[in-house]
Image (tube, rainbow, N blue to C red; front, side):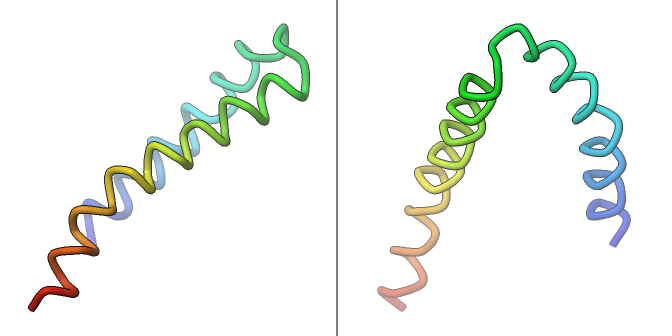
Length: 55
C-alpha cells in the first residue's frame, strides 16, 4: 500500500513539471511522448502476461 501511495505522489509531483518542460513540443508532441510511454508499458508487461497464460 505504501509503494502504491509513493508512486501516486511521485506521479503527481513530476507530472506537471514534465508537462511544463514538454510544452515547447506542442500538443501533438506531448501526445506522441505519452503514446510512446504507453507502448513501453505494454512491451514491459507482455512477458508477465505470457508467463501467466502458460501456468
